[in-house]
Image (cartoon, rainbow, N blue to C red):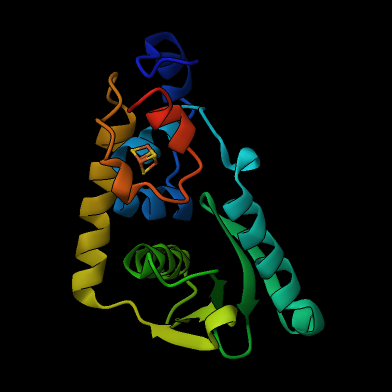
Length: 185
Ligand code: SF4
């Protein structure tokens, strides 16, 4: 079992982490430990059924509409479904249980687009299984909050010690569950 105090690895990865991604934002809102583990090279997504299921939903939901969309990569973010004509960023999620994290991930995409001259975009959070769509906009207070969050995210990532784990009850479906909680009563 890997231990969490991976000072050597952490130091090795630190200098590589220059750009913050939507995933960093998402994890920051979910669990600081998850953010730290992910950013410091301990990634478990490939072992998670929930992540695999989410990817399937993501890939199949837009199959017939793909011509309408563009994939965009800039400043560390990757947007799979951008609708240039209406300036809409679509983000597909499996469940709305982490909706605040989803909203900020999408707001961060809008922020990065704006910083790169693609202004006045709208975000659409889509939950195909729930037949639910939610509009996400970037406001002035959001821009300030994002700048503060970027600082907080970098501080967590660059800390030599990973943050404490959350109680098991808050960790359902997390791909790091076994890493964090195996061996507990
Ligand atoms: S299992 Fe819990 S404590 Fe561990 S990374 Fe996931 S959410 Fe955080």
